[in-house]
Structures are given as structure tokens and as C-alpha cells.
Image (tube, rainbow, N blue to C red; front, side, top):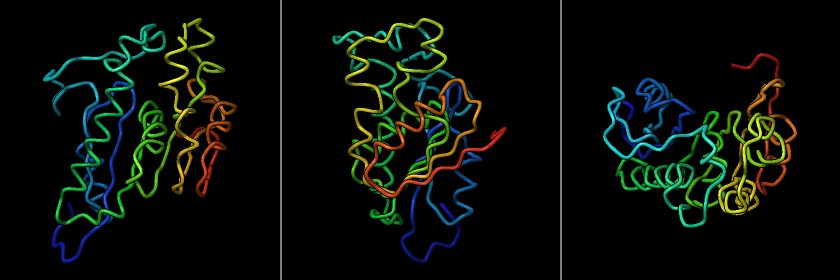
Length: 205
């Protein structure tokens, strides 16, 4: 949180990408803007990378070929559950304005953010960098031949939840991202019902 708080302040949930962790500097950056901020590790690790919870991998066939019986234990499901708990934590803080809790996700964090904005109505704004839905239509994983189960398509893909999103969303991407390509990205973006802003640029890092 920022120093010398005198009034309730807005807050941000910060969602890391694949291979990421809870980034303290990222949270401090937002605190410098006047926000309360939380960054959590979605792989069950502490800030030093030590495993303190159950490890769920991504980038394996099982991440997309999810069986109905293993839905609740999938990494995608558990990651979104962790984000929702982070929103609840911020909401419980006395210094936080409950009506002004936003979220920012990058890459896989953007993917998980795209789900969360459609299931958690407490969020007031979002920034989605790279991540999107409809990966089974076009992405590096479809070209590599990964199997996308019907359970994944119907219950884990962000496109199922983005139509519920009514908050302002800023979408950021570059025009050469092969993980989250522009056609899947744009179709996901157009599913939302709130104000929608997008910036696509060369060599965005």
C-alpha cells in the first residue's frame, strides 16, 4: 500500500504470466501510483520460488485435454480461484475502496484475467496484456497438435465468460504474438459488453 494513506484508495490484482511468480516490484510500482496492490504466485510457490503448495504445470497436453472429473483440479481453474481470493483479500482491507478494485494480467495472466472479469462482478476495470480465449481455434498450441477437450472448450476457455464482462477493459498486444494471435485476440475482445480499448503495436514487450 502507499505511504501516508488518509482516504480509501483503489486497488489492483496483478496476475503473472507463465513461469512467473509473485512480483513484489510490480506491486510496489502500483503502490507508487496510489493503489493498494497484490501479486500472488499461481504455481503454489513463495516469493523465492520455493514450493509451498501443490504444483500445477502449464504447457502440457493435460492443460487443454482436461477431463470433466479433473476440472476443479486443473491449473486453469485453480489459478482463477486464487485470483478471486485475492480480490476478496483486497475487499477485506479497511484502506481499500471496494468499488475500485481493478486487475491486470500478462500472457497466461491475461488469459486468467479474461476469465475472471466474466465471473467476478466486484472488479471495476481490467488491463489484459496478450492473453485471450479461443486458443483451440488458433494459437501455437493448435499448430503443435495439442488436444483441446470439450470440457476445456466449454468450461475453461475465456470466451465462455467474456460476454459477462461489463467493465472497461484495456487490451494490449503486439502483431506477432504466436501464443495469443490477433484473430483469437480480437474475437475475444469483441465478446465483452463494457467499454473496450485496444492497442496493437510492433515489438511490444
